[in-house]
Image 1 (cartoon, helix red, strand yellow):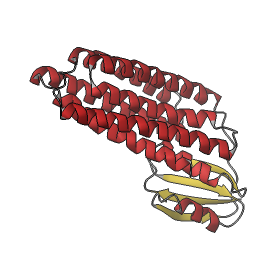
Image 2: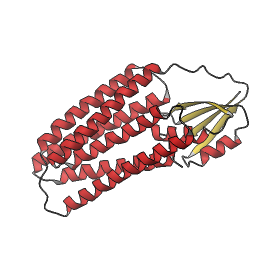
Image 3: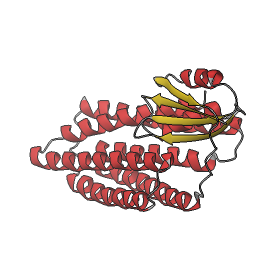
Image 4: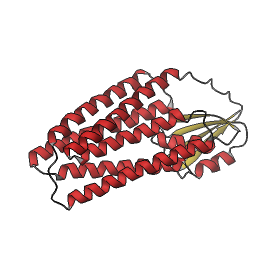
Length: 264
């Protein structure tokens, strides 16, 4: 058994992990993958030479570098991830639940910040869902699910951008700042609970570390929407809400592009 260690500069979330897993799945010589997303490191356990594996990873254009290849290593024992899967199901449920809540209250309160935050929650739900539902599925099915999810998310992001532009150039009403602050506070609590559940697992597995990174980013977005709500009240203006909405929609679009890369 051989172990090749790669440094992948652009691997910073579950999307890149899934891209690599799906890219290497047809290679029967690959026996196990070990991801360390915070340190941008990937360990590939394989039986043949590393050249074809390295070429496949390079095709993803994630700024990879082969650091080393060790011969005669033992394959690590697979870990029991049943508890981790339960936690990810809870995190998926929390994210999707707040997607529905924030999308609904966002349109009622005329807040693009809440609508954008809801799509950010949906983006996380899609990534977690792909990780959970794709286990054991055929490659063609994985790619089909990824493609549908990516285009759906991209369509929603484009609709969001168009609405931001429409409100920017029209005399639209100022959003209800109370809804922005209250709903975002509840979403913040939900993300803090998710982060607590993930950290409680004390797992070094890549998908759990990546989930912690995603949830931490969500907490920052929640704080941004709360700040926008305060500024809407303080300035009596719609501009803070449109600015935060546009920023978050850009992140949602970036996530959609990453998901579509899974379908290649």
